[in-house]
Length: 483
Image (cartoon, rainbow, N blue to C red):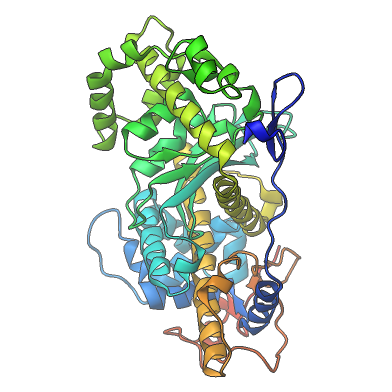
């Protein structure tokens, strides 16, 4: 490839590596037309109706158990839970939600205190993700083996131990949420972190704590998620770290042999490998590296704590030095594959774009109070982040399901619609949330009737959405929110 002297990866006249950006992906015109037609067929669904319908399918609201143990569940509990989840995921808050839906603030506050916590939110998200994974169309998005992670910053109001001033992103102070997204568009991990801390320390946390059935074997990040320690640990744990590194042509590449031998064997690539690996150091501490990986895999140590400590350690720490040397070797192997395989580069870019798309969805949902987090304690901030994740996964699962129903309807009408044609379709891109005052938060392109509208029959909710009235937060089938 380098010998040809042309193409997206080449050497310039000075012998430096030049990497051209990827061209836009060529999506077939048939796939674009299919996506537009399927979007037109999706039914109108206010987000509150969506959450009720998904509970009918998955029973995720049953995961919210009383913190004091087994308690009798009143008929109004699910209604109250949905109101609390919407108040947190849209950033409306309990006070304004009480005004909008007619449920008293005291009831909503009691429900949040005793039922909505990280443990129950994780269980509810797990139920939604497992349901989404079983949908026929989900496999068209990906096999569930690839995921990505990235941080999303939110401004904060008031003093908080997690808030920091960062003039590039916030007018005053803010924090970050670090989320993990699968190639099937499911968000399986969320963590609130200090905005000024390095994201790379938290990449492994949710992957090792993954309780879903997603068999994650490969993970993509941007430059902020990359360290030599992470490259080494991913390989020792039997996974592949596949980042998109900015200025990849400037990183240090390592060779296992002396310079003269490397340049003789690889006339073009040899001069790029400027440092020699210390293979003896790796061999001497390899058993310790395996024990370190075992401690992480079986949960005896927290990944973010270990990665932070090892990344900050100097050459005096022999184990950290051996791990970084091993990571340097794995990074060089990754770079060779990344530069030589355009399909690999495009796969990573496609996965990171899915994460960016879901970030936009979370921003659309979390729009009340200008998207500012007002909770001050880490526990409350974590709970709100998981509520937003639950709402995001609910939107994705619902959209995927009704895309599948629309495709089946087209097939019954004699239309040929293969799963290959469906792979470019994003489960997120049909989502539109209303942020205007006194308008419904809806999941639809439009609410006007069309001749091609998907026929789904009557509402599948246990209680018809239109019958909830002001106590359920729905009026005339729409979730009306007063701002």
